[in-house]
Amino acid sequence: MEMSRSSFGLLLLLGILFVSSYAAADSVYDTFVQCLSSHSAPSDQASSIVYAQTNSSFIKVLQSYIRNQQFNTSSTPKPLIIVTPSDESQVQAAIICPRNIGIQLRIRSGGHDYDGLSYISDVPFFILDMFNLRSISVNINDKTAWVLAGATLGELSYRIWEKSKVHGFPVGICPTLGVGGHFSGAGYGYMLRRYGLSVYHVVDAQIVNVNRSILDRKSMGEDLFWAIRGGGGASFGVILSYKIKLVRVPEIVTVFRVEKTLAQNATGIVYQWQHITDKIDNDIFMRLLLLPITVKSDKGSAKAEKIPKTIRVTLVSLFLGDTRPVLFHWIESVLYWANFDNGTSRKSDYVQKPISKDGLEGLWKTMIELGKPGMVFNAYGGRMRNPLPSPRWEHIQDPVLDKKYLNLIRELYSYITPFVSNSPRGTDSYEEGKVYGVKYFMNNFDRLVKVKTAVDPQNFFRYEQSIPPLPN
Image (cartoon, rainbow, N blue to C red; front, side, top):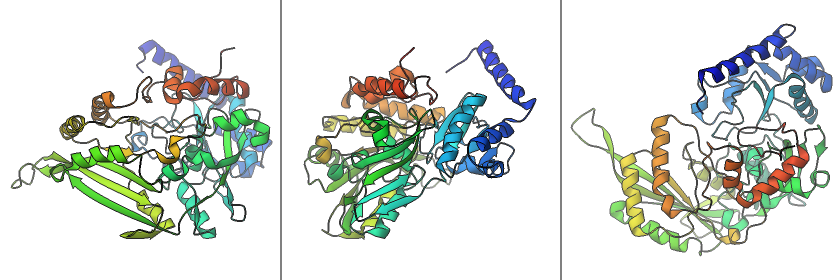
């Protein structure tokens, strides 16, 4: 959003006033540590979990969980401090302290929000980073696990596998994704068609609310419990942990991968895939990766420019069973899928009717002309024919990239407009407030606003795309 010189001057002036008001007595860091120690641990322990910009480890801690490198530059807005709590009392204190000294809170759990909303802001802010809260307690007797919000999906799959070779959990394909963001955003993965979304199997949770109270499912109530399983957690409080119900998986599963170019009838494969993929066995998940292939325009020149000439379609599949040809243990399949996390630049849509062959031919032409953007098709069907109530079925991500690549993505996004869902269409994450909320959560937005108003009427937990409360 562009700002006039006068508005920028005002913002700068406010920033100077904010810093100087505390620099006169203590630094923001000292003020925060004093507050934190008075509400949780002794000061020496509090200081060990708080990183000021002058701390030699500040940049390392900040950058460790930035997944979109566009937000990892010297000009990217930095937090005044980073707090890395190791117990729930420190989380509770970290909520009251920014309220006392006027710093905005951003909650980070894994850093896979490619818009950077958990670690950048245009106002003075601090990061509450949950990466130290990552323990996982698996109870194989009752087939449940308590998972702290800072744990990753890879850690969760591995800890379950340690206890049982025939149990797992339906999570996404990227092992470094944080549980807190994945569950609160209703993430999905390669068991989508058999077991649906991750949140279908969340049976309890713990959240620290704006009053610093720790609530479980019973004490938070079903409305808030519903909201934090698809409506995002950072709008309503700080998620500490989730209790999940494990699902059965075969010890041995089958994977296969097929690659075809346009000359090898890739168009026909994609066309047919659209017609059958929601009708096949629920134990099969098939993902399509569509990428332009680059070749040298002049083989005799060392400086020959690489120009896209065709499209490569890759069909990647998992079957929850033993059919051969490529067999993995369940935990090995988790690593297999992790290889297909295709970058950080994303938009999402729903294709509700098959794209015609003419439409696909036009898509190939557009992709070859643009040269860089690729596409991923994930099939629903199966359990998703009758989804359980959740604020959001799919987490849409769209990073702030430099203009060159962002414009390419938008051109491709524009081309597929006639083929995807509308009224409304999937959101563009540059939008904010109600415009964003209605597009993203559709008919669930009003209910989420009511929940927000009930639990955080003063809008303490806020960011550019958070759920707003009703006006007073």
